Image 1 (tube, rainbow, N blue to C red):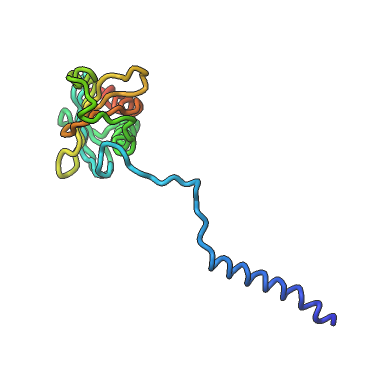
Image 2 (cartoon, one colour):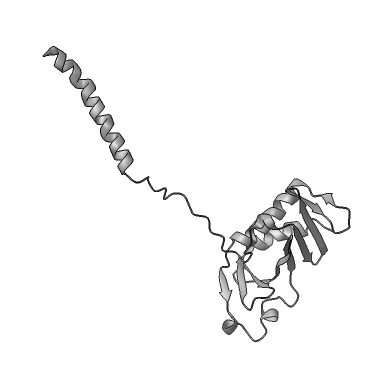
Length: 182
C-alpha cells in the first residue's frame, strides 16, 4: 500500500503533463492581437527600398540624391558626396512616409473647386518631390497650402485626378531635406 501511494504522485504528474501536451497539440496558437499588421496606404505604391533617386525642389533650389549601396549621395552639383547620417535618415524617412502615410482625405474630381491648383496653393507649390527607381520615375508630388486647421497639407500627385490632404509630418520631413541647402 505504501508503495502504491509513492507511485501515485509521479503518475498524477505524468497524467497532467500528457494532458497539457494533448491540449497544446490540439489547440490553435494564440492570437497576438497586440501586434498591428503593417499596411502601406500611402501615395507611393512601390517598396520605398526600391527608390534610388530623389529630387527635391523648393524655394531654395533643387537638390538631387542617389542611393548607392544603401547610402544616400548628393548629386546636384555632380560631386556625389555622401550625405550626413541625419540627412540620410530624414531622406529615408520622407520616402517611407510617402508609402506608409495614408491621405487623411482624397478629393475626387467631382469634389474639386473650379481651379484646384490655385485653391490648394499648388500653382506655386511650397515643395515638389520626384521619386525614381532603377526603371525611372514612379512618383512626382507637389505640396501646397496648409489646411485651415494648420495640421494638414494639400498635395497633388502627377498623373492622378485626385488631390490629397496629407498629415503635416510628411511635408515636414521633406522640408528637413530641402533646408539642407544645395
